Image 1 (cartoon, rainbow, N blue to C red):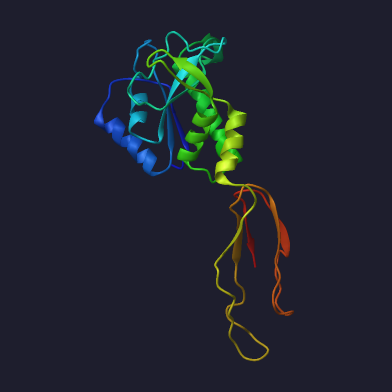
Image 2: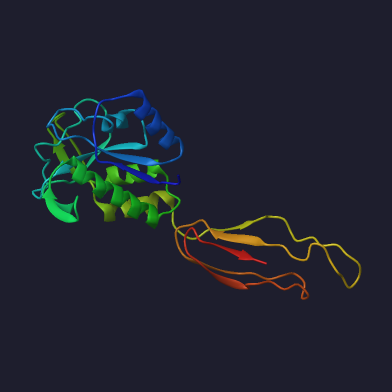
Length: 238
């Protein structure tokens, strides 16, 4: 349905239908961010555990205000799970019946990562799931994981954005479709067919660009004659 991010602040038993859905999301370049679980286990629960074999699934653990892994947060052990950590202790949030409360859990940490992913995708619209996951993982502050005596990253969004821009490159890139010239036919003095042609100019780069448009013959009118395009923005020129 056009989603770029799916947040799964939930957990449960493994099943084939769920894995198929996660794999289908990956085929459409959709990132699935899943809570690792709150059992204090040495291994993440499902569906987060699928990050060990599906590149578009990211497991999320919780850390406290002391910047240490929360005692209830599931670890990754030797499973090969891809996991990052985010704030998940005493998080002030909405609850049913139009109220607010302070809650703890990896389900509270997971939306932080979903929001980070959205911010990074907004900063670099053409970035892939793999590029964003790699940027979050590469720039995170190390947090000790007693499950395997190694460290894993606590997300640092500003650093990830810098890394992502470096990975994806910088600058604006102008593309024009269709690529063919306007060819019109008709008697001397007209009328000519076709009367006009519409070209779409798009900015496929990472920064704002300014463009200009002109015709090779003085009797051809071009509108607009120029403009400014933000990243991922397009405009029709006739």
